[in-house]
Length: 364
Length: 214
Image (cartoon, each protein chain N blue to C red):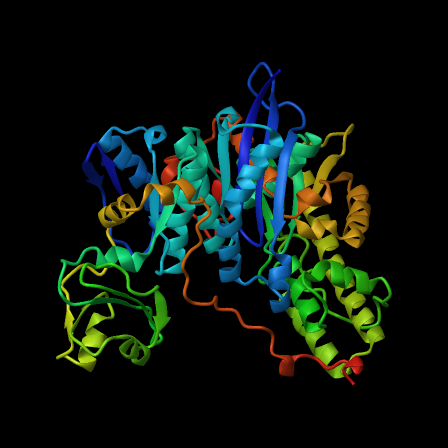
């Protein structure tokens, strides 16, 4: 069996990452089976941003530049491979924080130019969308819920480069909503794990918080999210209660998390109905419902969405937590998929960094 | 971008306020092609590390740190203000390079008549700038020159040289570095930011009160 080996670089937010993966190729030149992660180096900047309650772009950019070339050398070393042994180099070109994107993109291009290897500019969301193919060899099509600090989207993944967006957030991403709620309640950063931990000892029915958009018309095909009204309601409730006791905080966290879960569950259920209507029914195997992004690490969310999936004839698939949060293995894998399918970046050395780059723009 | 091959300099320049990242790598590729030098034959690399716009400096360093890693050749970092000073003719007067970095901040460095550094690059206000200088006739270069000259037209004379550092001067300054420096330089050069990042901590007065606050 043949292989393609790809170096991936990720610097779009607050993780600096480099990884090398190996993708198996069958006789007719398509990817067959799961990939091997030869190295996967991630340096989180969380401790640096934590005092600010969120990512500070300039701090992030400074740290990416300081660390990236060290991490690339480490990834090559751990994979025990020289640049010459690579088939391509891939880097996140967007969406994300422009300062960080430029560092990863420029470094990757320079390495590719010097090593005379193809360079592939990767959409960060495509990296998340395809990770489950690296880990589980999941076949197209599948339904994806991408939930992270920067994104909240439901999409039908029809094939490489063909993504049909069913819904997106109109304001905050879900991870961002968790971060802001945690900041408001003076819990730590990132907010997701803090809220989840406090919610365990709280009463999720203690406070009636809104579930934006989910009671809208069901006939349309809109699966959008909105969390900003929920965030405001939480603030107003907390302001009424202050000074806050530990029980108040637990109950607020539980009520907030329950509202978020309800929104994600209802929107996912609607997306499953739409997905099933779009694709010919398959009686033997349930469609995969994939959750990706950092918020996929939330256990309450996984339990809830596994139930929803079962109810609608889907099966839940989630990559291991280290591949749900930002990493470079997913970028390397997306690079391998594009290399094998010969869907390469045009004029790769001039490929721009794009702070905004909707996945739908990739679809022809 | 400039390259020396057998004594000859091959260079390219694009003035731009945006889009360094998109332009830089194609330019490196183009200059190497024009010079008929394969990337693998590059022996030494040099890059400016600031002060300058944070993003611009980082793009240059990212590219060159990436090239240094892949080619396994030494990389030296040269100060931007020194590169600008290198454009001036030799004189019997000292030279100050002052770049207007807005908010009454100037990136500045003082050089002797041979355009060799007398001080390290630093950031200071216009008033601070004056106090740095000897009370004698001095040449001024950079985008802050007119502001400084306006304070004392007798003492300061603005030089008519470009406000932007040129790669050919980076090349000349790098070539003047000793073999010892080239032998010991590490590839992981940091930008000379001279300014802290813009970041503000949450205001405690605006936070919710907790019972445990006492």
